[in-house]
Length: 245
Image (cartoon, rainbow, N blue to C red; front, side, top):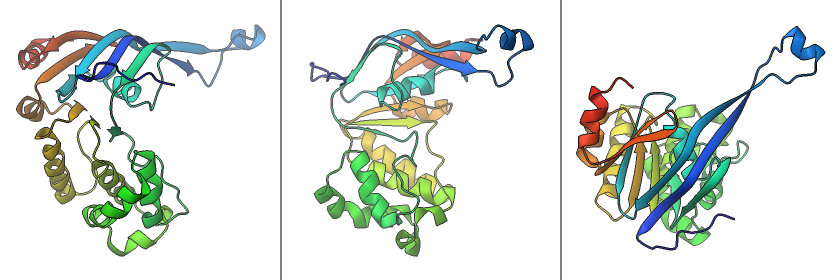
């Protein structure tokens, strides 16, 4: 079981964390078949990374594609587990990385609110109190009583997003901001997220929208090849823009 952070001023701690993925090649060569060699390549997505994030910090993680940003988020919110090292946190984490996780396709949207709400840390009493707000925000109308296998991907994302943001997390994880639903829902989603910026919530975001990040975040972590290149205030954005890595 993951150890919780002892210092109440620290939301998240990573100690010498490495994440290695094994890439299996579909078509081994003749030599590999003859000598019974597995065609496996290892890819290090996060490389001996240590990090502390304080409670209430608004943290933006920047870097080119493949730099390890999303893997880092998945490690923090336990979608993935480190190959070596330790990850610990304090408080309820809600991730907006995989909004459809926890849904059962045969159950109705209404029933899935209870199922998914439990996954993100709400108890049944809290879900009952918030279910009307969740349904209204998702904006899927009469489909709330239909099984979710009848939903479009946009409807599932809207429902998943609505459940997540109504869970009142201590730590909110965002990947590439919001792409749930049409433009009107995206605007409503951004407005909802901005409420978290005004509270003592820890918010961690991966995004290429540097204008949005500079406006709302106070700490910037620049990653490349699974390592932290730089970590600090808004000056990191200027360094990142000038860099070729």
